[in-house]
Length: 237
Image (tube, rainbow, N blue to C red; front, side, top):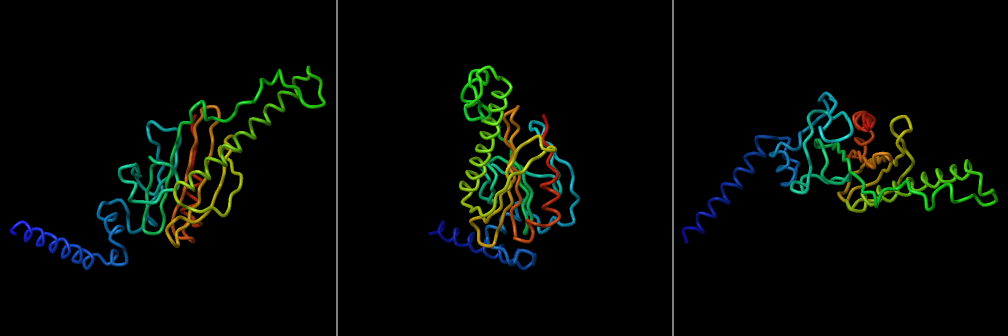
């Protein structure tokens, strides 16, 4: 009986503490309990609008990107905090209106695109002489580019599907002055009224896939700060 009473008292104190917190912090009043928890964990700021963008590079990763402050890692242990379009683990920052996310994935040799079906010197073009190695090599390169394009399409669409999101616009993209092929995708997340922009790039020589995304209110994902984040990505060797 005593333990039951103690439990009821504890629950009552937690409820009073929750409503006391809501009363003392007006910015939390329109949030659901999950969003309040995010704010208490210091994981979501009320606003990042006035924060200065600074260049970030993780010591073990191969990109630089500008965040509005020092990012945190979103992983399988705290994935419930935010709906991410990019795979986990990733680095991120978020406020109540917009989230910034980036992931780097090493692709295995078995899954990597960029392989021709037959060695270029052994496969002549239709209508070409078998000894025309220049034309054959050109055909092989076209095959590689097609494989990369198919790979990017599959990878980006899989990210969207795994996040429970929908896709309604996609187009080719590139990074590094055209050195890295990519895809640019837009759509809606599984949360009503929340949209995303996703860009995926492939570093073919090093077999690395980069996914960078903004997630938030429809007007915010098209804002200057969203464009600044997406446009700041630098892929490193």
